[in-house]
Length: 340
Ligand SMILES: C[S@@+](CC[C@H](N)C(=O)[O-])C[C@H]1O[C@@H](n2cnc3c(N)ncnc32)[C@H](O)[C@@H]1O
Ligand code: SF4
Figure 1 (cartoon, rainbow, N blue to C red):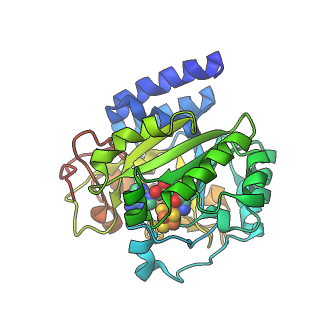
Figure 2 (cartoon, rainbow, N blue to C red):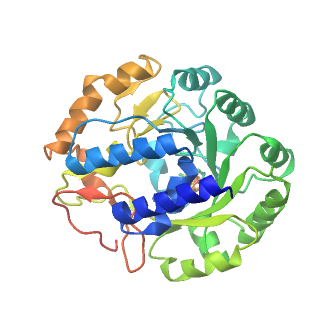
């Protein structure tokens, strides 16, 4: 790692300590923020959140959903959402929508992340998408479940200008089978092989969701994957449909400087808004600039600042327990994080 990157990581770690109360969150931030200018905008966004200023200093990242649908049915994800989500929107983001999104991004956007609700490797034009975004000066990060990370697809991905690949995993063979329905050994082999063939500038990370069924097992992951991946990121499971998580006045997610774009063009400021209930516009109908400056988003921010929280946000909470890092800081009255 270059000296300038080490220095940036140091400052981001400090920021993570102040903001999340936990420096380890730096891995999540560093994935998306590598430019000092982006770090400055992120800091101003977070200051606005803390001071309850209903304004973004700038958009810094965009999450794209290339595929809405998955070859797995993880217990905390698609498996749980499928009954309400199935058939709700197009399975694949069209090339036209994708290129239009990339072409409209403001200069402040450093990173485009492929993920959201689905498995990006199922998109037949994924490599073209990565190349297109990179050719327009954006860094590209991506999430995958790792099951399709083999053969020609893996070789193409390894040569592509992807900046960060996150492979989602469970700590053990048993939890991988029980919670993700995968063969741990096979996915580990895929990751090992990919680690050896990726281009030198690409970071490879493991992403682990902490939940009541694996919490005591997560610590060992760092040791077991040393030398194969560059780092291991952990985050709590988010429960999206609790009855009510109590009164909440404001949520950092809205101020993160990130927008999520679903296969149908819906734009949402929350990466957990799987059903698009917090939609602030649709890129098939309006340009991105108009959506960002438009009344729906501005009213939403003002509402959060006044304690008027959308119903979707009253059903969202994150798993918390001893040693579980915080993912989405909140302000104002709320019930504490609690084991689900
Ligand atoms: C929804 S997946 C989509 C990309 C890809 N299919 C994968 O598994 O990485 C993106 C990330 O969200 C995580 N995830 C899924 N359900 C979650 C939940 N309820 N709370 C927190 N993270 C979750 C996954 O483990 C994965 O790391
Ligand atoms: S976490 Fe990823 S692999 Fe698992 S069901 Fe969700 S989208 Fe599919």
